[in-house]
Image (tube, rainbow, N blue to C red; front, side, top):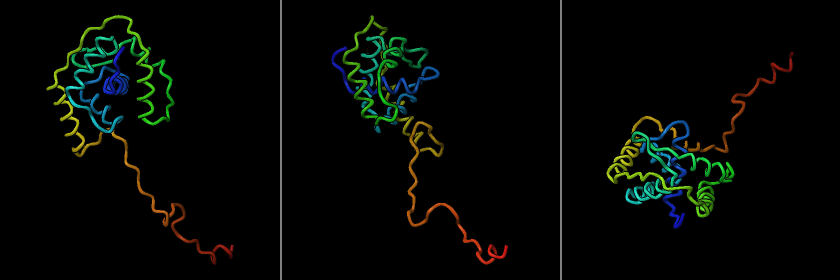
Amino acid sequence: MHPIHDVDVLLLMATALASKRRPAELVEIMAATDLMHGSIPLDVDMAAAFLRLSTHGLISEEAGCFTLTPDALEFMAGVRHKRKAEPAQRLLTVKQELAGYTPKGEGAAVRVATEQISAAILAHRVFLKAPGRNMLVPKPKAAVDKAKRPGQWRKLDTARRSRA
């Protein structure tokens, strides 16, 4: 599969993340992309990536939702990356493995309109600004005040303890 674009790798990993239990909607794939990469590529690039990956037999569409094909699941299972590796390192590992991947056959071309992708990106951004929570977005880390340690919050009365 040549050439390998960064958007292809990002879309492949985002689809794998979003469609673990059931086929993922376009908004869920955009949320997973935003989670892994910190931003979402242009809608034109995403549409081209959907077309490339589907013709190589890695992504399929089922009733408007997207999932990895059995060949892609086998490929992603064969990719060796550490669970605690940074997302950039994971993307690089998948990109290197994808460069050596040879498709077993032609897949059905999935054409996603740029308007659909733009609408999914906009829906994801609106959802992020809503008061609800998105489970795909990482939680911010709380700043711990070093002067105030967790633990005992009151002093024990030492005079009462010595009498006993």
